[in-house]
Image (cartoon, rainbow, N blue to C red):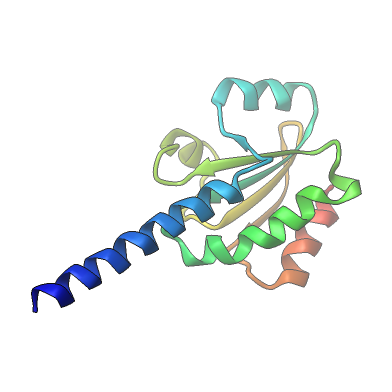
Length: 133
């Protein structure tokens, strides 16, 4: 019985580690949200795509490869891609009235051009973001 518990604990530890590595890999190439830098980019009139995510969110994990694909495309080369942690950045959430994780926003400077909530359909999510760029 003890061996079974030890095996289950080892598998759970590996699974959590794999999820953390996956979350770290998904933020590569993205800027982590910083209020001052975000405000500066808005004042400069930059186009900004914001991914409001949570590490524990399965919808966010489904959106991640679609958003990463958009980030690496040619038309996105001048776009700033920012990750906002839903569990940490409560001021950002209040300011932009974001009720849940898996929200994607597109800003043109200080103007919000698009918002998508919990969209995992590749065509719709891409269309919403690309249509606002």
